[in-house]
Length: 277
Image (tube, rainbow, N blue to C red; front, side, top):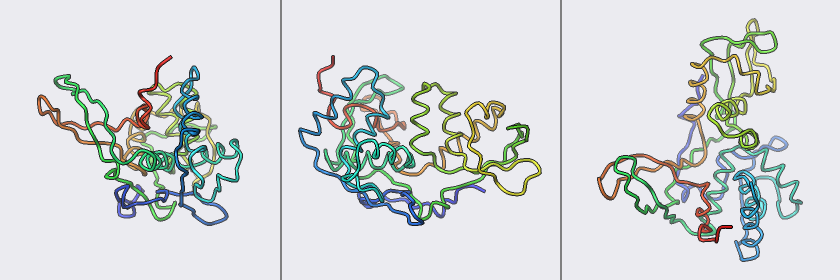
């Protein structure tokens, strides 16, 4: 079973509105509504100190921005929560929802146009490029169950003395990216972290149903290269939330290529002109 593309809806950010693409389930109810406060000078001062801290990581900045600027995310009334409670709530969100919230806030605070510098991979020409963030495609599903899919491994591998035959996967949580960041974002760690963060069930040899079994990172070490790459690709293809890829034509050689909107850059919220220390 693969994630059903017929159940995946696509709208632009402008069409989508102030709703999470996946949402947060609480007491059997799925909540998607989000709301933000105005980004004023006092919030700018508070948030700018995070980038001034030596070794501050992007995942920490994203959480601080969402904690400070959102008044509601799904069922959570952020105006009534202390910072620690907000951080726990964000870490449990789907990664797709966090990316959406970050993008949504950028448009609310700074407008829909974003200009950044690109370098052509063919002729190395550097040129400015402006994108309309309101046109970013948001992929969503009506029910969380529609975001799950199964993967049958080509080569069964052992976990706790049993052979894994099939995996059930769902979109990863923000906590998976936090763990990857802490361990160091080399390709092997990233793939392992994304896969383990996406596994919600395991079918073992001799078993009829999927078992819910949280895995330690090392328990995937016996997975073959083929299954590793196929799983990584399937997770990427099944991704929900904002599609940050863009098509570009070089201003000099007219080469056409694809790249991504650099949401991790400090300039995403117009703070790149801040003096560096």
